[in-house]
Image (tube, rainbow over all chains, first blue to last red; front, side):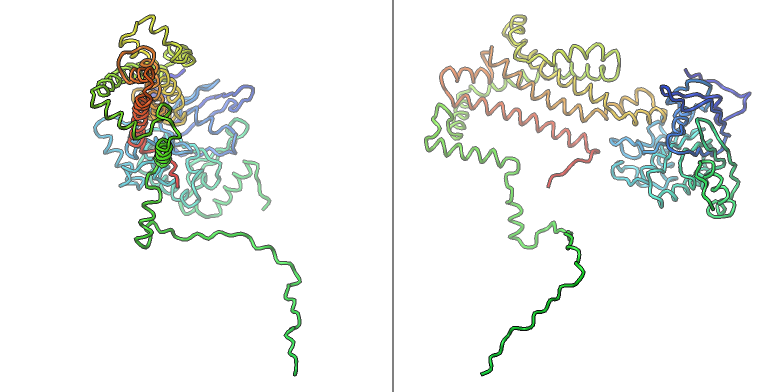
Length: 243
Length: 297
């Protein structure tokens, strides 16, 4: 069941998930989980494979319904999946403007493609793109609708390390232009530190620990605070290194 | 005289430690697409000058020789040249042209009817659960009934004029089109449908931009079967009850032991089949440009 409501009194533009339960047969993947994401916050959800982070993302995207609890999300939201999920029978520009209507759709599509440095590739077929380019098209497709919430499901996991670093830079750049709450699901601790305003670690179907990240770009690249945060996150994941 | 013995002391240069056996290696170098000299260029061009028609042409030549020598009798398999002459004669007598026109008209009408039914039912069945319940059972049952077996019933119901022939051809075309289109629509990548839903795509646009283009390869497979079965239906309908058309020409020729004319009919049927296949190939090349496919060496 889904209801569209205006909730001006709550004053929350991001995400509110309250006591969310999700079961697959006998297995309870999400067990009375609570989560809020601020209006323009970039929250990173960190956890190992199979901990339920993608399950949570699908619930927030509205692709699945919870078995218990309530979820409140903006109507205007977009998802970037792990695979690019481009329509192979459409060229790049129509792929980007797939969800757009109106006469200015093409112009908006071109503008967003320029933001992800793909100007001039509008007429390419998806099969002609590299992995990084295809993922940037997917990012453009999510941004073009000006969503209030962007959900990213391990969007850079399949990319090589160099391309991934470039994509991190791109995401930081795009955040200054597009104002939206973002949830990034990843199992990569370094990616979490590079991008997050706040990092939450999932464990046993609930949100475990939460770390606010107040670091500058340089500090995220290398600093004592960064290493401390990294150690703390690894400890939360049960991967404490004996330094 | 001193005898100089050339027996040098035997030198055993074998090392004490056994060397590993040399491993096989491959070396790749740049390939030249353009052959250097004009002779090689000529050779390239004439390597397979007939392309896919190499084997058919070879068979024709062997057949011609065997017929000329007398191994194959004129009532068994007349020489290709004689079949060709017969075709020209029949055309000049004004027999072949009208028969061909009648047959083509039957195929065209039957295909138009059959494809309309097959595509409509396939799209509705693929997109809607209620469409599936309406059409799927009956089409699966039709699929198990051979065309030839329905023929007597069609004759009893509709007589022996044009209508039963068109119905038989339509029947042959509709069933494979429905089955392939249904399966193709249901088989569209679930991940793309999910993506479209999260991208705020309306249902109409989901159908137009995702489901139907995604089902296109399956549609073309269905079309290929439909065209083949429509010609099969034509043969069945014209052979059993007709007083005009290519099938009638064959039946008559059989009665008077005119093997030449039987072969003329067969050749025409096979040309129709080849043409149908060629149409689908062209459609595939145009409609499936986006799909990378294997290029044989």
